[in-house]
Image 1 (tube, rainbow, N blue to C red):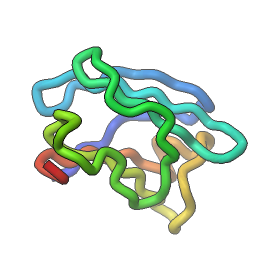
Image 2 (image 1 turned 60 degrees about the horizontal axis):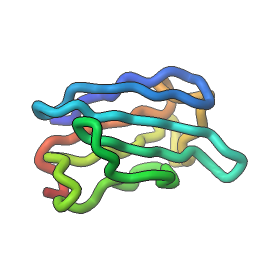
Image 3 (image 1 turned 180 degrees about the vertical axis):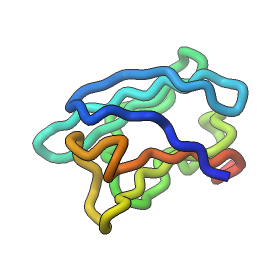
Length: 100
Protein backbone atom coordinates (compact mmCIF):
# COMPACT_ATOMS: atom_id res chain seq x y z
CA UNK A 1 0.00 0.00 0.00
CA UNK A 2 1.30 3.44 -0.93
CA UNK A 3 2.19 5.99 1.73
CA UNK A 4 1.81 9.76 1.18
CA UNK A 5 4.93 11.83 1.83
CA UNK A 6 3.77 15.12 3.42
CA UNK A 7 4.75 18.15 1.32
CA UNK A 8 4.04 21.87 1.54
CA UNK A 9 3.33 24.24 -1.37
CA UNK A 10 6.69 26.05 -1.26
CA UNK A 11 9.32 26.38 -4.01
CA UNK A 12 12.16 24.90 -1.93
CA UNK A 13 11.81 22.42 0.89
CA UNK A 14 13.81 19.79 2.69
CA UNK A 15 12.37 17.17 5.02
CA UNK A 16 13.18 13.85 6.62
CA UNK A 17 10.57 11.09 6.52
CA UNK A 18 10.69 7.71 8.30
CA UNK A 19 9.94 5.02 5.69
CA UNK A 20 10.52 1.25 5.81
CA UNK A 21 12.76 1.50 8.88
CA UNK A 22 14.99 4.17 7.31
CA UNK A 23 15.14 7.96 7.34
CA UNK A 24 14.57 9.32 3.85
CA UNK A 25 15.83 12.84 3.24
CA UNK A 26 13.83 14.63 0.54
CA UNK A 27 14.85 17.95 -0.98
CA UNK A 28 12.66 19.62 -3.62
CA UNK A 29 13.56 22.70 -5.62
CA UNK A 30 11.46 24.46 -8.24
CA UNK A 31 13.46 25.81 -11.18
CA UNK A 32 12.31 27.39 -14.43
CA UNK A 33 12.65 23.99 -16.13
CA UNK A 34 10.64 21.98 -13.57
CA UNK A 35 10.65 20.55 -10.07
CA UNK A 36 13.86 18.74 -9.06
CA UNK A 37 14.37 16.18 -6.30
CA UNK A 38 17.38 15.03 -4.31
CA UNK A 39 17.24 12.03 -1.95
CA UNK A 40 19.33 10.68 0.89
CA UNK A 41 18.88 7.46 2.84
CA UNK A 42 19.99 7.45 6.49
CA UNK A 43 22.14 10.52 5.78
CA UNK A 44 23.86 9.11 2.68
CA UNK A 45 23.16 10.83 -0.65
CA UNK A 46 21.37 8.67 -3.22
CA UNK A 47 20.13 10.88 -6.04
CA UNK A 48 20.69 14.56 -6.82
CA UNK A 49 18.91 16.88 -9.22
CA UNK A 50 16.33 14.45 -10.63
CA UNK A 51 13.56 16.03 -12.73
CA UNK A 52 10.15 15.08 -11.32
CA UNK A 53 7.48 13.99 -13.80
CA UNK A 54 3.90 12.84 -13.34
CA UNK A 55 3.49 9.10 -12.72
CA UNK A 56 7.18 8.34 -13.31
CA UNK A 57 8.96 6.25 -10.68
CA UNK A 58 11.90 8.20 -9.26
CA UNK A 59 14.39 5.68 -7.85
CA UNK A 60 13.85 2.67 -10.18
CA UNK A 61 16.90 0.66 -9.06
CA UNK A 62 17.40 -1.60 -6.05
CA UNK A 63 21.13 -0.89 -5.78
CA UNK A 64 20.34 2.47 -4.15
CA UNK A 65 19.25 0.50 -1.07
CA UNK A 66 15.79 2.04 -0.73
CA UNK A 67 13.29 -0.78 -0.10
CA UNK A 68 10.68 0.87 -2.32
CA UNK A 69 10.15 3.72 -4.75
CA UNK A 70 8.60 7.17 -5.01
CA UNK A 71 6.26 8.67 -7.58
CA UNK A 72 4.48 12.00 -8.06
CA UNK A 73 0.81 11.82 -9.04
CA UNK A 74 -1.25 14.70 -10.42
CA UNK A 75 -4.66 14.24 -8.79
CA UNK A 76 -6.35 16.56 -11.31
CA UNK A 77 -4.78 15.48 -14.61
CA UNK A 78 -1.40 14.52 -16.00
CA UNK A 79 0.75 17.64 -15.55
CA UNK A 80 4.25 17.41 -14.13
CA UNK A 81 4.48 18.64 -10.52
CA UNK A 82 4.90 22.33 -9.72
CA UNK A 83 5.62 23.76 -6.27
CA UNK A 84 2.29 25.60 -5.90
CA UNK A 85 0.31 22.34 -5.91
CA UNK A 86 2.57 20.22 -3.70
CA UNK A 87 0.67 18.31 -1.06
CA UNK A 88 -2.71 18.93 -2.69
CA UNK A 89 -2.82 18.56 -6.47
CA UNK A 90 0.62 16.94 -6.71
CA UNK A 91 1.06 14.11 -4.22
CA UNK A 92 4.33 12.27 -3.58
CA UNK A 93 3.74 8.57 -2.86
CA UNK A 94 6.10 5.93 -1.47
CA UNK A 95 5.46 2.27 -2.22
CA UNK A 96 7.46 -0.32 -0.29
CA UNK A 97 8.61 -3.30 -2.37
CA UNK A 98 8.37 -1.38 -5.64
CA UNK A 99 11.37 -1.65 -8.05
CA UNK A 100 13.49 -3.62 -5.58
